Length: 400
Image (cartoon, rainbow, N blue to C red):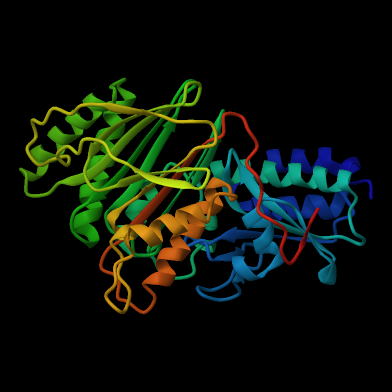
């Protein structure tokens, strides 16, 4: 179909587009310079259950495309292009540096050749990079992602996040907050360097704004220490002092601080609270237990000690907060170790980002019909050691 003939014009248009106009610019350039007949940008909502159109902007709750029951959703979940024959539409994952944003759906006159699909995948990736920067300058795409009104506490928590996923040299990383539109004090943060990955999972005590303000202080204090060159022990100590200085020991934050070296597989940790670390190795699921130390902010003069564990290529490390393993069903049964291990094991063939979605869905299914009084966070770190993670098996649509 000669897609490549017009791509230079598409990239030029995308490069010069205003942050709020990326979707229109890509659509118009594709229609003007390639055989594409129409295009729509679909963004994943905060709860990762639906895709929301940007160009035909819906009101809250309307016009969503369910991720688990659509070809566009299949492209998002599998990170593979999907051809929908009935609508002559090619669905392309919009992703940048391992962070999934949504799907670019383009209508074509005929089924595309593999070379055409490859060219359009590169356009979708370029759009993903544009969206990463645009969110700092416009609210348009964040508005489009919302299926419901977000609480102020949740707005603060989502604003703290570095992203929802990342692919680095030798590792893949993903995280999710739940309930997405009313999260309280659970959060995660990460920072990648040439030789290591820093990661923190925090759980501020309390609910609503009280928990959000506490977690905001904790995450900011940890970042300040990390960006000053502090190691894990000093990060924990400085954050402990900052939180105690503000709250005098009345409020504290459960935190797991991690540093991962992808070149060696060494994982260093300071365990200061309730987030739990689980390792999936093949079919074996094991909780990694470090010496548990005091939560941040309890006394303000706590000395923290770093510990370590050695990983093997292919290991998956899952960090979950007590909102997951402490969840209760309508029958007052606890999620528990056995079910938690089963859900983690079920993700072994999924990439990190889809594994997180599977674990969140498992927890939500278990506590369906129960009023939620605790929020939850799940973070997944895969040591790929530059290996290829096996993709999800084909489903309704055909992966191109």
